[in-house]
Image 1 (cartoon, one colour):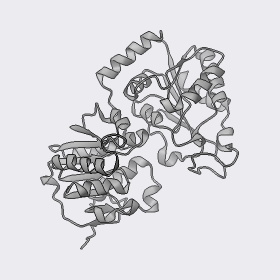
Image 2 (tube, rainbow, N blue to C red; image 1 turned 180 degrees about the vertical axis):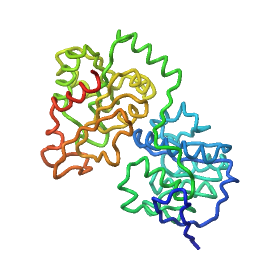
Image 3 (cartoon, one colour; image 1 turned 180 degrees about the horizontal axis):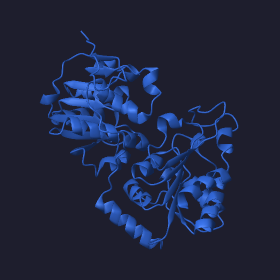
Image 4 (cartoon, rainbow, N blue to C red; image 1 turned 90 degrees about the horizontal axis):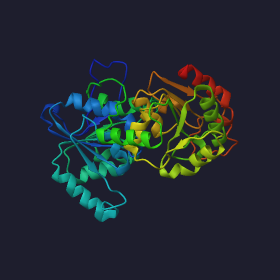
Length: 365
């Protein structure tokens, strides 16, 4: 029968509804599997929780299961020991592929699975792999597959995502290790970033990164013509080199920004790997971006960030950095959390170029 666990005295300000189906002695855990989230930004937001797992289990071997595009977030991390790649569209595709993945997980002989990803499938895979202890939120109807489940209440959903992921650990008595984001860059990616800077004659120049794209839909995006106008003003005022970032799926919007600019820019959208992009962002004096994964990367790398918010909520997904500024004009329909605006995109229309440039001057002067 499920039991309720009272929260330890060291965190009296929060309460969690938890269910425990099997008692766990944390001191006996030697092999841990962490199921990563599937989006780059979300994965970066889990890094305080990943660090907390390491602090609570200093002698355990920690493996993270992640989709291929998320791997660069963790590949240079000192908090984990091994990365397993979940090739959802490759060898782990379909039911046969899931069975193969379950077999691979069984060979890992994990004793505890901590599921930061909320999907039903994450719990089903851990259950199928016979991992004795399975911990996570009871979302997506997966509570029966978890031995340690946390009720996902409205209160849990209304906090910043960093605290949302930490909540899983805190609910079962694990101590957090701060809320600071962590993002380590491999020497290979640092070296490649320097090669790219030399290739585009950017060495020694003041760099300002611009990220006009965003996954999940166009509602999160400020307008290309405004990014172009802003970039020209920055170049003219501060003689900064403008570097445009983004993924392959965002090439069209990045090309549009570059074509609308009066001054030349370096458009790297779709031309670098994610790890290389992280290393290049770290070279920037300022990063201007929509709500996106690269926004969280810049925040994690202590690069000054100006983040433009419209359809999404900075309370839950804003950049966690003392050197960040969120630019947002409240409207009656924001945050709507919709991928495409069904109104007139007023939340972004009301963010003017001059409004953003005022914040640029604060950072660059």
